[in-house]
Image (cartoon, rainbow, N blue to C red):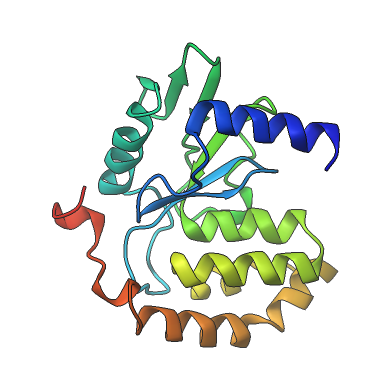
Amino acid sequence: MDASSAGTETRTSKTFGAGRDLSVYMTLVDDRLNIFSVFDDLRYDRSDADIMSPGMRTHAVQQLKRHGFKQTSGSVLHNKADDVFCYIPKPQVLGASPFDVLRYTPKRERDYYILTPTQTACQIIDTYSFDDALEKVSALIQKQPINLYRLMDYLERKPVHETIREALGHFKFIQRKAVQSEPLKRRKALGSGLFG
């Protein structure tokens, strides 16, 4: 483990404790990128907008309050004691690529992003080697389904995306199996108000 990884792990432990899951709907997916993913529903349509729904946003705020965060604006939370921010990036235009969601929301190394599972998968794909991305996205979709249609629509003609394109069938198989099995198959959408 290098020094920067150790520093991130220390900050994560200090701020959030040992657990990666803040709830069954919100998890720290990647502590190198400092990304929390909040999942809402089990099924997606190609036309679904990939944005943080009100239910997802409310859930994230509730979970982070337990760790000393206060909402300072609609998309920013701050833990004053640890000087850590969590940002919920907003797409600049409706229908923007989930690969571009972080473009207009810079953060410090110690801060966190709160993303949808699809946005999270896109950041993993653009950051890691193919083998690592395959492993990490496969692990993600077993806990939090992603919009594979939207991912497919926004893959670009560059080598890293072309190799991921070839893995879409693999992701689809894993995700279908996950959503038909426990515990995912009984999860309700956060917007339903049952589990917010």
